[in-house]
Amino acid sequence: MGGENMAQTALLQVRIEEEMKRNADRVFTNLGFDTSTAVRIFLNQAIRIGGIPFDIIGGNEEYGMRRDEASTRGLEALRSMRETAKNNGLSGMTLDEINEEIRKTRNGEGD
View 1 (tube, helix red, strand yellow):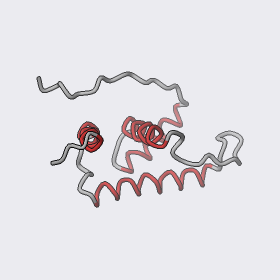
View 2: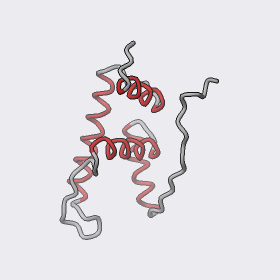
View 3: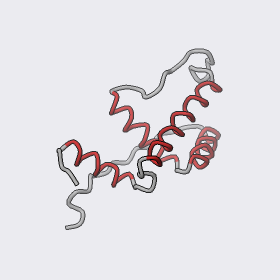
View 4: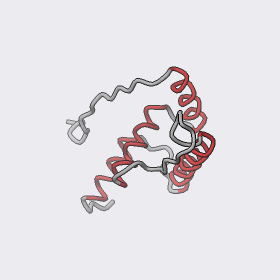
């Protein structure tokens, strides 16, 4: 009965270059979470705003944007989200707990 409110999960597989995975793993580890969590954050933000949650800037043909600027802006956004969570006492919450809080808020359920 404890699993009544648990959302069903689906597997998402993406093929990327090994070096990109290593680099992404390193970045997200430095930010305090794993790559799967970073992907979930990206997807939640994309759903929330109805689009890609950052600007895509032309410049580097290989990546479709200037890597240095994209990396800096992406890291700044992630650090900002982490700081906001910390300031609001949410940094220790799991994704399931965060989603439950969102569900309660949407349904108008108070504490």
